Image 1: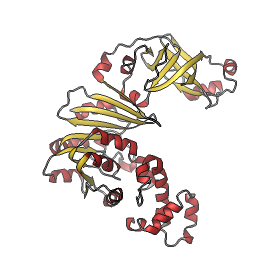
Image 2: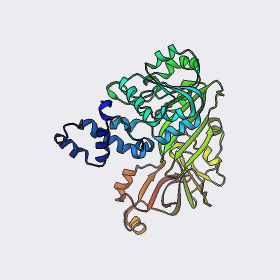
Image 3: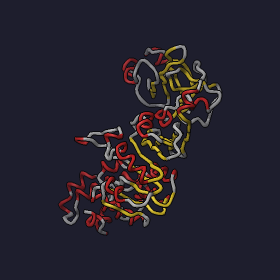
Image 4: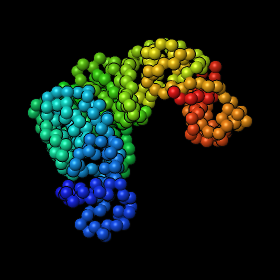
Length: 394
């Protein structure tokens, strides 16, 4: 099908109808007997996703995309480029090549990169796109991961893996031993073949458990995009100390938040606890996923933690560079409609719950508050007990 989709007239049709309704295009298939409409409509849907997720691919003529579901699951340009910024060397292997997004960006940090993929159709797709992108230092191989390593003669600088996280009946899996390939099982072979390993994992994976399973972990990177954790990255090499550095990054519409710590320091941290003050701070999703609940407070003097199990902080003076959401506290609220109607005449607010005995849905049901608007309600707990705070986001 690649040979059909790369034809000039097919590419022109995709571009000309890029923003047409897919269902209408399918219904009009009879008007275009020379167009493989099902595949073209999939290309249109995937290319639309690429406009924001993979802008460099979107801007490159001739790129052929995988089906829309695969586009949902592949790395974004921002996360792939971030991985490439962490590494460099002469030669590396992407052992689970897939669509080749990570391979392409990693290729910009190495003299030579080997793309390995067990599905022939993906090899052909990636190889064609590499050519369109002008990536001439990538060598493509149709191989099983273990078979390629067993035939490898020279050690490389880095092996990168993104194990498939689909189990039987296409169910999602998280643990390394449930993925394909099983990183834990083949880890000795991996470490014989490369000086360093970089393993991408599900954002749902337990980080401390994964560090114990892998051993020799040098660093962990928790990568979020617009406050949604997208992936976990584990570096493994001979320099592991038993207390890996934890690096969190959250890409924003403009810029990024970076924050680092380690678990020994997190364990030893002794935060101050107190009651709500003028400003409330919520660490971003990458920090919360990484478990830097106390470390974040230690790195920003003047902040007080609300409660041992409430991962929110407060201060009298605004801390403008805090890596997360900041709110100005306007008032405390009561959980009854009459009181809320006086404070919120529109009966509308965004509700956030942290360490509170009710869920967002339960609060909305009890108060009849609609979602949205400029006002925020933070339902949480400080050292004196549950509080309901009326806030504006800064």
